[in-house]
Length: 172
Image (cartoon, rainbow, N blue to C red; front, side, top):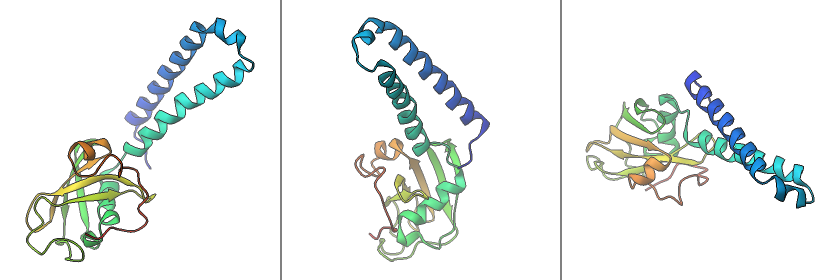
């Protein structure tokens, strides 16, 4: 996963903000800390949690190149294997327009010429559902794709499906 300078800067600012928040919280609770048996361990665990949980969430839904989004289409749906998608950014790390060089197969998908409005999940390189796409034309060669919660808001995938392990492309 390539990290752009802008993304690295965002993560650095997030880290500094989290550090300030943890320090302020610890200072506000200094009296309560004295009563705890292992205040340093608790503070370290809290700081680690505050940093790692948001960082993992950001990594799961951000920093995606158009090529990574294109690769996620056939990883999510068997009918899209061999279609050679290419994607362009609409909104970085959220929305992409993708075009297939070949129409999808009928292997588990709708009949030829009936793809418009069909929704399919996208699956990242680690084999987890990371978003989804909606076919924009009947031949199934144009798709609007959304990453993370944007796919949930677009009613392409359910919140419970996002992040699920998907060891092989889905059928149907």
